[in-house]
Image 1 (spheres, rainbow, N blue to C red):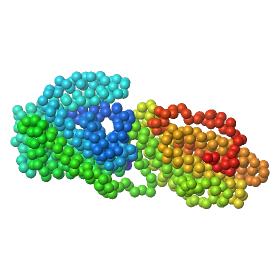
Image 2: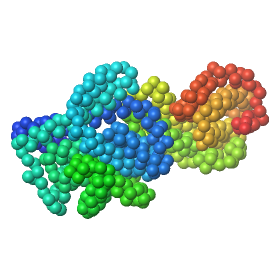
Image 3: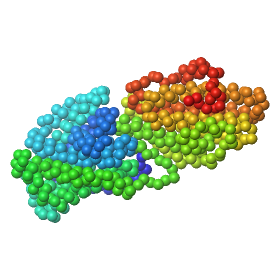
Image 4: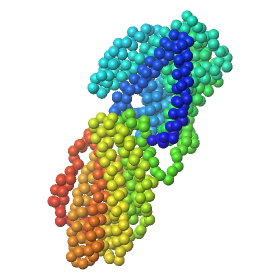
Length: 624
């Protein structure tokens, strides 16, 4: 989640550019009525893209996310996914948003994300083929109007997929209508003004029109819209073929400007992905500029081989656009590994004493499955930090818990004191992540389908449990430090017993998470719940016996009874947290929906075994 300061360049850019664009448009409207048709066509086309993006978002409740997860384990699969999704959605920006959200949530790596972006660049060429091969040769308005009618009708339906399909149909209608207006506008120019008089031949024209294409894409925030504008102008004979090639190169480079601006407020991985996008598009554009004559000859050969007439410059432009993007993929795909190393070394995250969220990103909010996964991973990140605080709070080292040592060996000796300021550690390692998780939950839960909203609520509760466990550890620590150093062996043993119980639970939770089987995890948590409840009853009997025998003072007994509540609070909260994490996994709902024991059921089980403690339990360790 980017800091507000990171978004200032983007806001400044928009504030400066918007008045200029409005002024130029107003002047153009005053100057020419046909300019209005072209501008309206561009606006309608861009609105159509927005409608299609909105429609495809309706189908991102899990299907698209699962397909992406299964389609990015190899570079060629990542590129194929980018090509296919961009071809279907006709929006490389939507594919980029999905990719950034997956990258931020840790579901794919940077190399896989780069592969998707490479594929998306090639996928944009399908739009050129559609417009050049179909859009300029057919009266699209005849198809656009029925699409809009039926699309709007579906948008007003309550069924979510139907509403999504309505947005897609309306988007296609607006795309067709926009192309129609652009085509009519450039045709109208022919009666009043011949724009080919401003054609610039040679190297100067190549550079100048590449710059125009880049600026047009920056203004419209869509290389697809720029390309359609170029094709309609070329089809109307208002620009030369050579200048159209240069405009197409500039449009490809210009789309990286919007990617870079969009990445200013993104995570460090989002910035790296934008960097890869910049390297690919600028590098591909430079190769095309240097080898433009070779590309023209290649276009002629391909066009002749597939039967495209020599004077059909719009289709030849589509061929060119495909060729130079394909060449870019051939050149840069072998360099993806080196690109990842370079971007990781050059673009680094902000160094801070405070730990910050790693997986949350605004881009994830539009995709329920990704948002759920991002919050689950961030909650696991929060627990990883809390693990250290809780362990140190009871004077245990993480290495001891993770090792194979028998924690019961710690029952008798005086405990080692680990210096830890829990308030400071909470401030540095927990507070920012916890706050970000709460904000992310609030922003995403309302947009979630009911099943995922329930899982999100479980993760929200898991965050509360983690913080509550840390606070209970803070309250326990004062007496624990004092009595684990006491000369009284009885009170020392009981407080060491607290340490051992908490350490064993942390160890069990670590092992269970490593197994990564959420169904087994829920059943194992039920077993631990029973053990905790049984231990809690047993500890009261032990204290009663110590008081009767005069082994501890009344003050010690009071502290022991009070602190046993804190220990129980820590363990119950940690179990609740683990349950929330397990329940948020998709597989749990499908395999075992209602097997977890309720609190009453736990008490019934404890009633059956109460008073039948094993020797291991008497020593203060969990039976294995």
